[in-house]
Length: 388
Image (cartoon, rainbow, N blue to C red; front, side, top):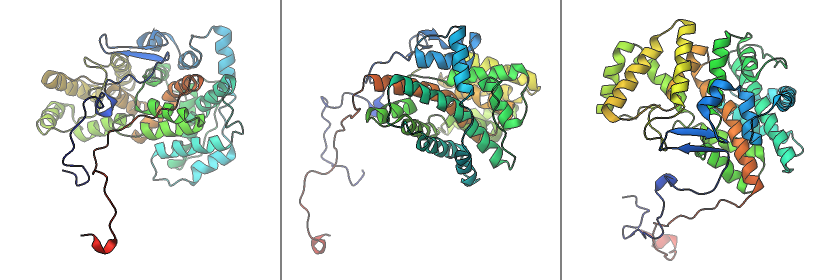
């Protein structure tokens, strides 16, 4: 037993009314999204995410999360005009990214760049709805530019400026690689952004709401969200999935690898979910587009491996993939370096974070839960020479 835990501690049932990790606890209301574990469905503002992914562009979904309704043509045009004109970052912000160690993780880079962005906004304490919306759009517009700049700098390549005549997804490919790929690849990427955009009170979103509840600013809350998303048990899982697949290397070895991993009780990333019990509702759509990527690039290796690993896990454990499992190989086939998978997640999730930040601000009370103390009973301090 940990020496700091009181050996005589007896739990008080009336106080311990939630599970470790707040599992199953409902701590607030929200109109942003809903995960229904009974039907394995996810809705954004009432719309099933798979329908949004197939029928809308990421920009439309961002507007929906911010405003509560899908935009009409004029609203979308105005929104896109605003976002496109915010894409440039300042020379000082770019300099901050350039000064970071080349060895640092891209999540550290984007966390630092967003923090610096907050210092450049003299409206830092202005929290009226119009200003908060404007800040949210700035984050949506500038974060891809920051990530792409870091991508190029880490490769020793010149930074490519954003273009205002491209969609968010097209522009990101342009800034990273200097070209826009096959429209099918752009669509697959856009779908991934929509699927990653929002997911109720997940760890990073809850983090942004906690920070916002203290009446801190949207940039601080976003930086905190990035820090939470970095963890391999949250956003970093898509990177771990691809590292796992590269370790396996051969699709013909995947089944035995999974059997061995299960026998050794290894944690296999990309499977299981705290909320979904019968499969992540986003997976069929993302798997479809991961397979499309394999068809477009002419490389079936990763999807063969995907199918073999999934088959064993479901067969042996009845545990299903989550969104990170198909997203990892999809991003890899698009040409992105593995350690940039989670920053791409940030690109998407900044929309959900901002929606929750604005919702928390509109009806705020500081989030301050209690803990049940299990340490030593109250005792007196003795002098140094009397301590054993």
